[in-house]
Image (cartoon, rainbow, N blue to C red; front, side):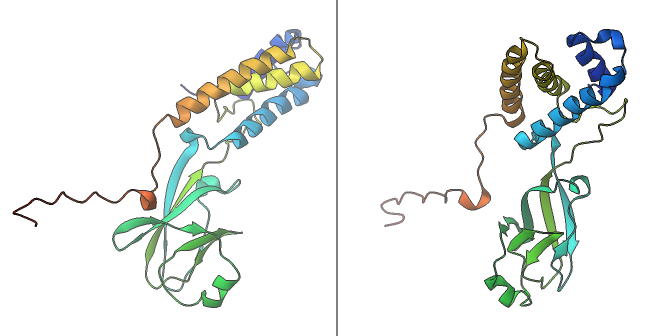
Length: 219
């Protein structure tokens, strides 16, 4: 089910603030109400790496290249989670960070092993072959300025965030109640988004255990 639109959320927020008589546009309060909603979504977006916005994009670099564009859906916020490449038939994660010392050997061609987030993704060193580079990212928020624009994040969470702040702004005595509801909902959504499965890094997996020696066969 798609999330609710800016107009839908504005209308409900006005009603919960006792301003429902102003209509869906909110009249003179529209700018403030829309700001509460947009700012709420923006703050919640920064709170964690939302699983439903996480994806990857593969790009190819050629010989003597070391610059890549950010993924098309992450051009604005550039929230890169990790960068990987295929080397010797296996996916390997690149380390983040290119120091001054690395620049001394930047032109020594080899496989990509490090990266830095600058105006573009900078790889170290320059490549000695054609490589596939995979960037995992959190997608940017969608537009949220027009009446028909839908929330990118869970609309109930965005609404509660806006309601708590609007209640505090207009000095409503029950503002703290809604902040508590938001905290509970946020914790629940984070849990559903990330689950409880343990994450293993490819380079930190334990080595296979040795087969027990058998007398008469091995010794």
